Amino acid sequence: MNTVSDMSGANTLVPRTKPQFIAFATAVGLAILALLAYFTWFHPAIPGRNALLSLMPGDAPAVLFIDLAELRRSPFFADLLAWAPKPDADQEYRQFVRDTGFDYERDLERVAVAFEQQGAQKIFYAVGDGHFNEKKIKAYAAKNGPLQKSGGGEIFSLPMVGSSARVSFMFLTKNRLAFTNSQDFGSWLHGAKAVSDAEWRERFARVAGSPVFAVIHNEALKDAFGADPPSQDLARRATGGFSSPQLSSLLAQLQWLTVAGKPENNKLRVALDGESLEDKNAQQLADLLNGVALLARAGLSNARTQQQLGAATQQSYLALLKSVEVSRIDRPDTKSVRLMFDVTPDLLKSAQIYAPAAPPVAK
Image (tube, rainbow, N blue to C red; front, top):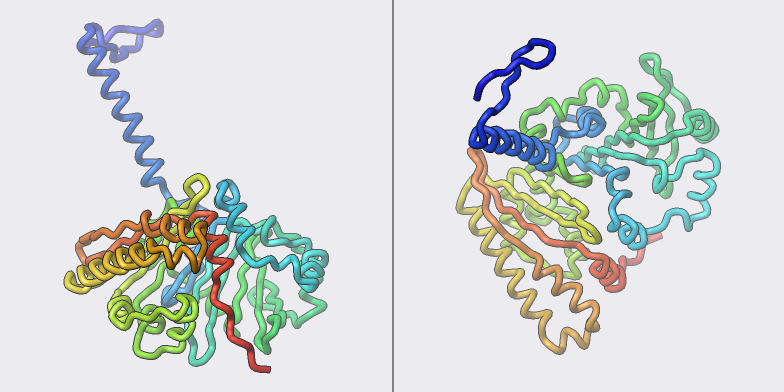
Protein backbone atom coordinates (compact mmCIF):
# COMPACT_ATOMS: atom_id res chain seq x y z
CA MET A 1 0.00 0.00 0.00
CA ASN A 2 1.50 3.33 -1.15
CA THR A 3 0.75 6.91 -0.30
CA VAL A 4 -0.51 9.44 -2.87
CA SER A 5 -1.17 13.13 -2.42
CA ASP A 6 -4.68 14.52 -2.46
CA MET A 7 -5.61 17.94 -3.82
CA SER A 8 -4.54 19.63 -0.61
CA GLY A 9 -1.12 18.03 -0.76
CA ALA A 10 -1.68 15.76 2.26
CA ASN A 11 -0.61 12.13 2.00
CA THR A 12 -3.45 9.58 2.11
CA LEU A 13 -3.17 5.82 2.44
CA VAL A 14 -4.77 4.33 -0.70
CA PRO A 15 -4.38 0.74 -2.03
CA ARG A 16 -3.01 0.83 -5.59
CA THR A 17 -3.28 -2.85 -6.61
CA LYS A 18 -6.35 -5.11 -6.63
CA PRO A 19 -5.03 -7.50 -3.92
CA GLN A 20 -4.20 -4.51 -1.74
CA PHE A 21 -7.68 -3.08 -2.28
CA ILE A 22 -9.33 -6.40 -1.37
CA ALA A 23 -7.24 -6.64 1.80
CA PHE A 24 -8.07 -3.04 2.70
CA ALA A 25 -11.82 -3.54 2.11
CA THR A 26 -11.79 -6.76 4.13
CA ALA A 27 -10.10 -5.03 7.05
CA VAL A 28 -12.62 -2.18 6.97
CA GLY A 29 -15.51 -4.66 6.78
CA LEU A 30 -14.20 -6.64 9.76
CA ALA A 31 -13.80 -3.44 11.77
CA ILE A 32 -17.41 -2.43 11.03
CA LEU A 33 -18.69 -5.89 11.95
CA ALA A 34 -16.70 -5.77 15.19
CA LEU A 35 -18.26 -2.41 16.09
CA LEU A 36 -21.74 -3.67 15.26
CA ALA A 37 -21.19 -6.77 17.39
CA TYR A 38 -19.95 -4.66 20.28
CA PHE A 39 -22.94 -2.32 20.27
CA THR A 40 -25.41 -5.20 19.69
CA TRP A 41 -24.15 -7.67 22.28
CA PHE A 42 -21.90 -5.72 24.64
CA HIS A 43 -23.30 -2.20 24.37
CA PRO A 44 -22.67 0.05 27.35
CA ALA A 45 -25.53 0.28 29.82
CA ILE A 46 -27.93 3.17 29.38
CA PRO A 47 -26.86 6.09 31.61
CA GLY A 48 -30.38 6.40 33.04
CA ARG A 49 -30.31 2.77 34.05
CA ASN A 50 -26.98 3.15 35.85
CA ALA A 51 -28.18 6.30 37.56
CA LEU A 52 -31.13 4.43 39.07
CA LEU A 53 -29.07 1.40 40.06
CA SER A 54 -26.50 3.62 41.72
CA LEU A 55 -29.21 4.70 44.18
CA MET A 56 -29.89 1.16 45.37
CA PRO A 57 -28.56 0.24 48.84
CA GLY A 58 -25.32 -1.71 48.52
CA ASP A 59 -26.35 -4.21 51.20
CA ALA A 60 -29.77 -5.00 49.71
CA PRO A 61 -30.25 -8.74 49.11
CA ALA A 62 -32.34 -8.25 45.95
CA VAL A 63 -32.66 -5.61 43.23
CA LEU A 64 -35.29 -5.44 40.48
CA PHE A 65 -35.08 -3.23 37.36
CA ILE A 66 -37.73 -2.63 34.68
CA ASP A 67 -37.33 -0.41 31.61
CA LEU A 68 -40.95 0.21 30.65
CA ALA A 69 -40.00 2.61 27.86
CA GLU A 70 -38.16 -0.19 26.06
CA LEU A 71 -40.78 -2.82 26.83
CA ARG A 72 -43.53 -0.65 25.36
CA ARG A 73 -41.80 -0.83 21.96
CA SER A 74 -42.15 -4.64 21.81
CA PRO A 75 -45.26 -6.47 20.51
CA PHE A 76 -45.15 -8.66 23.64
CA PHE A 77 -45.90 -5.71 25.93
CA ALA A 78 -49.54 -5.45 24.82
CA ASP A 79 -50.07 -9.12 25.75
CA LEU A 80 -48.35 -8.55 29.08
CA LEU A 81 -50.64 -5.62 29.89
CA ALA A 82 -53.69 -7.65 28.94
CA TRP A 83 -52.55 -10.38 31.35
CA ALA A 84 -51.58 -8.13 34.27
CA PRO A 85 -54.14 -6.93 36.85
CA LYS A 86 -55.77 -3.65 35.88
CA PRO A 87 -55.51 -0.95 38.58
CA ASP A 88 -57.46 1.48 36.39
CA ALA A 89 -60.54 -0.64 37.10
CA ASP A 90 -60.30 0.54 40.69
CA GLN A 91 -62.19 3.74 41.46
CA GLU A 92 -59.50 4.91 43.89
CA TYR A 93 -56.77 4.51 41.26
CA ARG A 94 -58.81 6.42 38.67
CA GLN A 95 -59.22 9.24 41.17
CA PHE A 96 -55.46 9.17 41.83
CA VAL A 97 -54.77 9.55 38.09
CA ARG A 98 -57.14 12.50 37.86
CA ASP A 99 -55.62 14.23 40.89
CA THR A 100 -51.93 13.70 40.02
CA GLY A 101 -51.95 13.42 36.23
CA PHE A 102 -49.82 10.27 36.57
CA ASP A 103 -50.66 6.87 35.06
CA TYR A 104 -47.89 4.28 35.36
CA GLU A 105 -48.83 2.54 32.08
CA ARG A 106 -48.33 5.79 30.22
CA ASP A 107 -45.90 7.89 32.24
CA LEU A 108 -43.43 5.60 34.02
CA GLU A 109 -40.24 5.12 31.96
CA ARG A 110 -38.03 2.91 34.15
CA VAL A 111 -37.80 1.90 37.78
CA ALA A 112 -35.28 0.20 40.07
CA VAL A 113 -36.36 -1.37 43.36
CA ALA A 114 -34.28 -2.89 46.17
CA PHE A 115 -35.84 -5.21 48.74
CA GLU A 116 -34.68 -6.18 52.20
CA GLN A 117 -36.06 -7.67 55.38
CA GLN A 118 -35.85 -5.67 58.62
CA GLY A 119 -37.19 -7.89 61.37
CA ALA A 120 -40.80 -8.65 60.52
CA GLN A 121 -41.07 -5.77 58.05
CA LYS A 122 -40.37 -6.02 54.32
CA ILE A 123 -38.66 -2.82 53.16
CA PHE A 124 -38.39 -1.53 49.59
CA TYR A 125 -36.33 1.33 48.15
CA ALA A 126 -37.35 2.51 44.68
CA VAL A 127 -36.31 5.16 42.19
CA GLY A 128 -38.28 5.85 39.03
CA ASP A 129 -37.86 7.96 35.92
CA GLY A 130 -40.90 9.21 34.09
CA HIS A 131 -43.15 12.08 33.14
CA PHE A 132 -44.34 13.59 36.41
CA ASN A 133 -46.57 16.58 37.01
CA GLU A 134 -44.59 17.74 40.04
CA LYS A 135 -47.04 20.49 40.99
CA LYS A 136 -50.08 18.17 40.96
CA ILE A 137 -48.29 15.31 42.74
CA LYS A 138 -47.02 17.57 45.51
CA ALA A 139 -50.45 19.14 45.96
CA TYR A 140 -52.03 15.68 46.21
CA ALA A 141 -49.43 14.55 48.75
CA ALA A 142 -49.77 17.73 50.83
CA LYS A 143 -53.51 17.07 51.23
CA ASN A 144 -53.02 13.45 52.30
CA GLY A 145 -49.94 13.42 54.51
CA PRO A 146 -47.25 15.40 56.34
CA LEU A 147 -44.33 17.23 54.72
CA GLN A 148 -40.76 17.10 56.03
CA LYS A 149 -37.84 19.29 54.97
CA SER A 150 -34.49 17.52 54.61
CA GLY A 151 -31.29 18.93 53.13
CA GLY A 152 -33.09 21.43 50.96
CA GLY A 153 -35.53 18.77 49.68
CA GLU A 154 -39.14 17.97 50.53
CA ILE A 155 -40.11 14.50 51.76
CA PHE A 156 -43.81 13.67 51.46
CA SER A 157 -45.52 10.81 53.29
CA LEU A 158 -48.68 8.98 52.22
CA PRO A 159 -50.62 6.06 53.72
CA MET A 160 -50.34 2.73 51.88
CA VAL A 161 -53.66 1.30 50.73
CA GLY A 162 -54.88 -1.46 53.02
CA SER A 163 -52.04 -1.00 55.50
CA SER A 164 -51.06 1.07 58.51
CA ALA A 165 -47.62 1.64 56.96
CA ARG A 166 -46.71 4.77 55.03
CA VAL A 167 -44.67 5.40 51.90
CA SER A 168 -42.40 8.44 51.65
CA PHE A 169 -41.26 10.04 48.40
CA MET A 170 -39.03 12.83 47.22
CA PHE A 171 -38.38 14.46 43.85
CA LEU A 172 -34.68 14.07 43.01
CA THR A 173 -35.10 15.88 39.69
CA LYS A 174 -38.06 16.98 37.61
CA ASN A 175 -38.30 13.52 36.05
CA ARG A 176 -36.93 11.32 38.85
CA LEU A 177 -38.72 10.23 42.01
CA ALA A 178 -37.41 8.25 45.01
CA PHE A 179 -39.84 6.46 47.32
CA THR A 180 -39.66 3.93 50.15
CA ASN A 181 -41.62 2.49 53.05
CA SER A 182 -38.56 2.83 55.29
CA GLN A 183 -38.69 5.48 58.00
CA ASP A 184 -35.07 6.42 57.38
CA PHE A 185 -35.26 8.14 54.01
CA GLY A 186 -32.12 10.26 54.37
CA SER A 187 -29.78 7.43 55.37
CA TRP A 188 -30.82 5.44 52.32
CA LEU A 189 -29.93 8.14 49.78
CA HIS A 190 -26.65 8.98 51.52
CA GLY A 191 -25.62 5.31 51.78
CA ALA A 192 -26.72 4.12 48.32
CA LYS A 193 -23.82 2.45 46.54
CA ALA A 194 -25.03 -0.71 44.77
CA VAL A 195 -23.66 0.18 41.34
CA SER A 196 -20.25 1.03 42.83
CA ASP A 197 -19.98 -2.42 44.44
CA ALA A 198 -17.92 -4.68 42.15
CA GLU A 199 -20.06 -7.80 42.66
CA TRP A 200 -23.33 -6.01 41.96
CA ARG A 201 -21.84 -4.03 39.07
CA GLU A 202 -20.57 -7.22 37.40
CA ARG A 203 -24.02 -8.81 37.46
CA PHE A 204 -25.77 -5.63 36.33
CA ALA A 205 -23.37 -5.53 33.36
CA ARG A 206 -24.21 -9.10 32.31
CA VAL A 207 -27.87 -8.16 31.80
CA ALA A 208 -27.28 -4.74 30.23
CA GLY A 209 -29.27 -5.74 27.12
CA SER A 210 -32.37 -6.84 29.07
CA PRO A 211 -35.14 -4.33 29.85
CA VAL A 212 -36.27 -6.32 32.89
CA PHE A 213 -34.09 -8.19 35.37
CA ALA A 214 -33.64 -9.09 39.02
CA VAL A 215 -30.38 -9.80 40.86
CA ILE A 216 -30.78 -11.77 44.08
CA HIS A 217 -28.02 -12.39 46.63
CA ASN A 218 -27.54 -15.46 48.82
CA GLU A 219 -29.28 -13.88 51.82
CA ALA A 220 -32.58 -13.54 49.98
CA LEU A 221 -32.25 -17.02 48.43
CA LYS A 222 -31.82 -18.59 51.86
CA ASP A 223 -34.93 -16.80 53.07
CA ALA A 224 -36.92 -18.02 50.06
CA PHE A 225 -35.65 -21.59 49.88
CA GLY A 226 -34.14 -22.36 53.30
CA ALA A 227 -35.63 -24.56 55.98
CA ASP A 228 -39.30 -23.65 56.57
CA PRO A 229 -39.11 -19.91 55.74
CA PRO A 230 -42.38 -17.93 55.66
CA SER A 231 -42.10 -17.53 51.87
CA GLN A 232 -42.11 -21.31 51.29
CA ASP A 233 -45.88 -21.31 51.74
CA LEU A 234 -46.21 -18.65 49.05
CA ALA A 235 -43.90 -20.62 46.74
CA ARG A 236 -46.05 -23.75 47.11
CA ARG A 237 -49.20 -21.78 46.25
CA ALA A 238 -47.56 -20.24 43.19
CA THR A 239 -46.58 -23.68 41.88
CA GLY A 240 -49.98 -25.27 42.53
CA GLY A 241 -48.74 -27.20 45.56
CA PHE A 242 -45.54 -28.56 43.98
CA SER A 243 -42.66 -28.76 46.42
CA SER A 244 -39.18 -30.26 45.96
CA PRO A 245 -36.95 -30.29 49.07
CA GLN A 246 -33.94 -31.20 46.92
CA LEU A 247 -34.50 -28.30 44.54
CA SER A 248 -35.11 -25.90 47.43
CA SER A 249 -31.90 -27.04 49.10
CA LEU A 250 -29.82 -26.53 45.95
CA LEU A 251 -31.33 -23.10 45.30
CA ALA A 252 -30.63 -22.03 48.89
CA GLN A 253 -26.94 -22.86 48.35
CA LEU A 254 -26.61 -20.48 45.39
CA GLN A 255 -24.54 -17.35 45.95
CA TRP A 256 -26.38 -15.32 43.30
CA LEU A 257 -29.45 -15.74 41.14
CA THR A 258 -29.94 -13.44 38.15
CA VAL A 259 -33.23 -13.42 36.26
CA ALA A 260 -33.49 -11.47 33.00
CA GLY A 261 -36.19 -11.08 30.38
CA LYS A 262 -35.85 -9.77 26.84
CA PRO A 263 -38.73 -9.44 24.33
CA GLU A 264 -38.21 -11.19 21.00
CA ASN A 265 -41.09 -10.33 18.66
CA ASN A 266 -44.24 -11.63 20.40
CA LYS A 267 -42.53 -13.62 23.17
CA LEU A 268 -40.32 -12.97 26.17
CA ARG A 269 -37.03 -14.86 26.38
CA VAL A 270 -36.27 -15.49 30.06
CA ALA A 271 -32.83 -16.46 31.39
CA LEU A 272 -32.04 -17.54 34.95
CA ASP A 273 -28.39 -17.72 35.97
CA GLY A 274 -27.69 -19.42 39.30
CA GLU A 275 -24.15 -19.17 40.68
CA SER A 276 -22.69 -21.64 43.17
CA LEU A 277 -19.27 -21.85 44.79
CA GLU A 278 -19.06 -25.62 44.29
CA ASP A 279 -19.09 -27.43 40.95
CA LYS A 280 -20.88 -30.39 42.52
CA ASN A 281 -23.88 -28.25 43.53
CA ALA A 282 -24.08 -26.63 40.10
CA GLN A 283 -24.01 -30.01 38.33
CA GLN A 284 -26.68 -31.45 40.62
CA LEU A 285 -28.91 -28.45 39.96
CA ALA A 286 -28.41 -28.74 36.19
CA ASP A 287 -29.24 -32.48 36.27
CA LEU A 288 -32.31 -31.88 38.43
CA LEU A 289 -33.66 -29.11 36.17
CA ASN A 290 -33.18 -31.28 33.08
CA GLY A 291 -34.96 -34.15 34.82
CA VAL A 292 -37.89 -32.00 35.93
CA ALA A 293 -38.32 -30.63 32.38
CA LEU A 294 -38.33 -34.14 30.87
CA LEU A 295 -40.80 -35.49 33.43
CA ALA A 296 -43.09 -32.48 33.03
CA ARG A 297 -43.05 -32.83 29.24
CA ALA A 298 -43.92 -36.52 29.51
CA GLY A 299 -46.71 -35.82 31.97
CA LEU A 300 -48.25 -33.11 29.78
CA SER A 301 -48.14 -35.25 26.65
CA ASN A 302 -50.68 -37.84 27.74
CA ALA A 303 -54.33 -37.79 26.74
CA ARG A 304 -55.63 -37.48 30.29
CA THR A 305 -53.75 -34.20 30.82
CA GLN A 306 -55.16 -32.83 27.55
CA GLN A 307 -58.66 -33.69 28.72
CA GLN A 308 -58.10 -31.95 32.07
CA LEU A 309 -56.44 -28.81 30.73
CA GLY A 310 -57.81 -28.54 27.22
CA ALA A 311 -55.78 -28.79 24.03
CA ALA A 312 -54.84 -25.09 23.83
CA THR A 313 -53.55 -24.91 27.42
CA GLN A 314 -51.70 -28.19 27.07
CA GLN A 315 -49.93 -26.96 23.92
CA SER A 316 -48.95 -23.66 25.54
CA TYR A 317 -47.27 -25.48 28.45
CA LEU A 318 -45.62 -27.98 26.09
CA ALA A 319 -44.25 -25.08 24.02
CA LEU A 320 -42.73 -23.65 27.21
CA LEU A 321 -41.08 -26.96 28.10
CA LYS A 322 -39.77 -27.47 24.56
CA SER A 323 -38.09 -24.05 24.73
CA VAL A 324 -36.25 -24.95 27.95
CA GLU A 325 -32.46 -24.95 27.70
CA VAL A 326 -30.19 -25.87 30.62
CA SER A 327 -26.45 -25.17 30.33
CA ARG A 328 -23.37 -24.79 32.50
CA ILE A 329 -21.09 -21.72 32.69
CA ASP A 330 -17.82 -21.95 34.61
CA ARG A 331 -16.58 -18.57 35.78
CA PRO A 332 -13.36 -17.91 37.74
CA ASP A 333 -15.14 -17.48 41.09
CA THR A 334 -18.45 -19.32 40.61
CA LYS A 335 -19.92 -22.30 38.79
CA SER A 336 -23.18 -21.37 37.11
CA VAL A 337 -26.29 -23.08 35.81
CA ARG A 338 -28.29 -21.21 33.17
CA LEU A 339 -31.95 -21.98 32.52
CA MET A 340 -33.64 -20.35 29.51
CA PHE A 341 -37.23 -20.57 28.28
CA ASP A 342 -39.85 -18.62 26.32
CA VAL A 343 -42.97 -16.95 27.69
CA THR A 344 -45.62 -16.59 24.98
CA PRO A 345 -49.01 -14.81 24.90
CA ASP A 346 -50.73 -18.22 24.90
CA LEU A 347 -48.84 -19.17 28.06
CA LEU A 348 -49.94 -15.93 29.78
CA LYS A 349 -53.58 -16.68 28.93
CA SER A 350 -53.28 -20.23 30.23
CA ALA A 351 -51.56 -19.10 33.43
CA GLN A 352 -54.34 -16.56 34.01
CA ILE A 353 -57.07 -19.17 33.53
CA TYR A 354 -55.44 -21.81 35.71
CA ALA A 355 -53.90 -19.58 38.36
CA PRO A 356 -54.28 -21.11 41.84
CA ALA A 357 -57.03 -19.49 43.86
CA ALA A 358 -55.89 -17.13 46.62
CA PRO A 359 -56.73 -18.25 50.14
CA PRO A 360 -59.45 -16.29 51.96
CA VAL A 361 -58.15 -13.28 53.89
CA ALA A 362 -59.01 -13.15 57.57
CA LYS A 363 -60.89 -10.04 58.59
